[in-house]
Image (tube, rainbow, N blue to C red; front, side, top):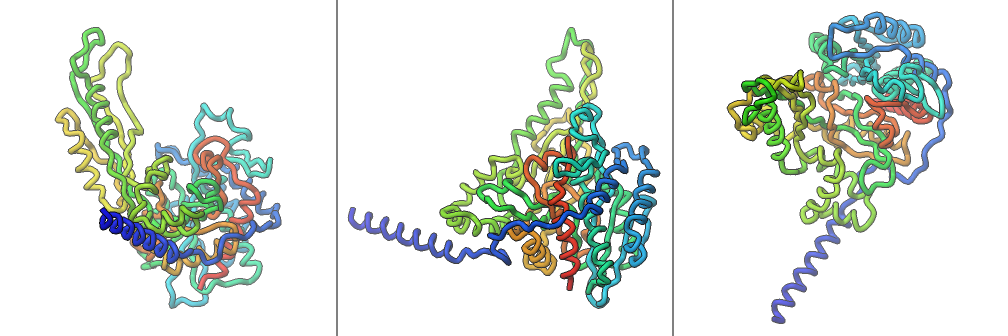
Length: 485
């Protein structure tokens, strides 16, 4: 018995020693320790007016691509060329496919690869039933209560106008970047980007241009969103989940509702959807999520930093914490959800043909083919037909050790001294997917402060950007472009 107790004691001592050693060597990856205070930047009333005016131009994209307000896009380009005339005088500009714009700012050193910054002009529609719920009209661009209100304030005109404001400031100083910078502005990101970003990328391929890095919208300066981190966190998207939608259709004899069959087409369809829902993948961490944990872990208070430093032992505890939120669960698996259902037209008629669309967001350790095969096997019903829709494979991961990430980290430390910086896995889809083969690295980051409340306004009601936050966004782009090497 004494030998057993001694063995157990020795085992505990070794375990504690390993835990302490791992924790002591688990160093912060921040360039600047994030204990600084937020900077108070002066309010540029001209910049505020420009974003307000941009929001007023209704550049809505619709799933029905025959509905295009070309006049709105023409008006938007006219607005940009008038308000930012010096920018257009000093940069090469090209209109792509009538509604998208590409600018080229020639740098001093043409022996190094250029970089490209991207934002989109279009916005999502306003649901008719929600119009009365907006505090200020969705396309008013109203400046009130410390915010600029309206559709596009956050997604994505806030970023687009910030880029132009930064360019205006640098042009006024006579600044020329060290390396060439392209600025791309797509017209239909909200419906996939096939006529905007894809066309811009095709143009650049034809010109045989490739990039050191590409930067798009994505992660933000989150406040109160990352579990157990009290300070703001700059989430730089270094990878993006893939995308595929499967349409599942059941065709079973219908008839009168007074004498229903044992199993209707609707029953078959619902059963298939439930099988997918009940047989979701097991949770796991992929490369990008592991990098995220490496960056946030050292910033955790004790004893949580020990937990993150010893994931070989405590990973299940960490995953349990992230499982508590919808966003956290989505980081850990390929997700599926039924988004569209077409079932029946009349209350006393049993439909014979019903269908649903199920959207999958794919983790980077698998492919769309694997997802399709697994879904087919899970449903396993001869009455169900599966049709594959649009596919985008998961992106590659852009390492945190790259030049581009270090530049974004340094810029964030300068403009947001109170925030920590981390790589992050993007759950949604951006136009970056169209540029994957012509850039070494891709980052998805809109440098603006974001709370859970504000995040809920993106594609929702009362979308708005804080005026002070907007000033920081402009400062970020100006600082980053100034620091390009």
